[in-house]
Length: 276
Image 1 (cartoon, one colour):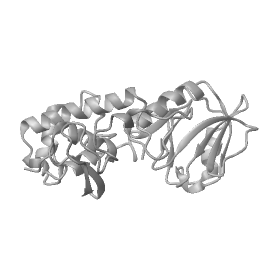
Image 2 (cartoon, one colour; image 1 turned 90 degrees about the vertical axis):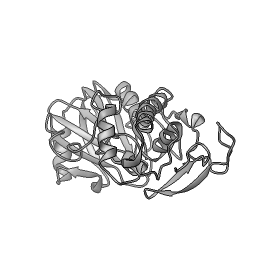
Image 3 (cartoon, one colour; image 1 turned 180 degrees about the vertical axis):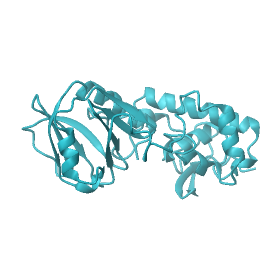
Image 4 (cartoon, one colour; image 1 turned 135 degrees about the vertical axis):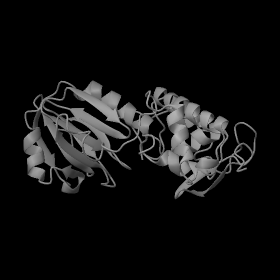
């Protein structure tokens, strides 16, 4: 699933591709992607004639700001956007097309069909799900060391489970939680409430630092991620543990291990991330 750095990269490329374009038609080939409004025809009708003024991001959600409406899009596992000429051949897995007045089309492709779209009146998008209960952005003032300390002290959950919780902090998924915890020297199964102040401080610092590095490098190309211009991310070349099972730790040389924690495949260096 694309995490904050990948979604931010998609947001930036979409800004270059679609801002200023006016939608003349919308076609939905897989209605289950549309979650609001319930009637797909209403979704299509409301978008006709709307101009895209900017593309934002909240956590892992893309937000298209139009004249009267806000389109909230979650890519989930395999969702991708691309800009095409209307005459270009349609990919088998293209499920939604936004045709613009200038003859170009923004196409949404999703092999797994897990992506979602919600259309709201402009200004109402943060008052309802899926955006309403999201935690703070990791680059924001709200994501303070004090805030993170309080969240971790209040729960008996494993620290990895807490960091994956989008109500605590948005944007972190399996890849970056593994990387943050390695860089912080913390075992992912350690109980959150048992973390020392120095461990929490390192987690806070490395969350911001790791995500910023990943954004700067265009995200991580794991499996099939591409940005909206078909370019791969390069942060995977900097990964310390994720996807490196059996390989030597870049810091100490110990073999990277993989196991299940918080219901997810988890990578650690057993020497750099001791449980006690």
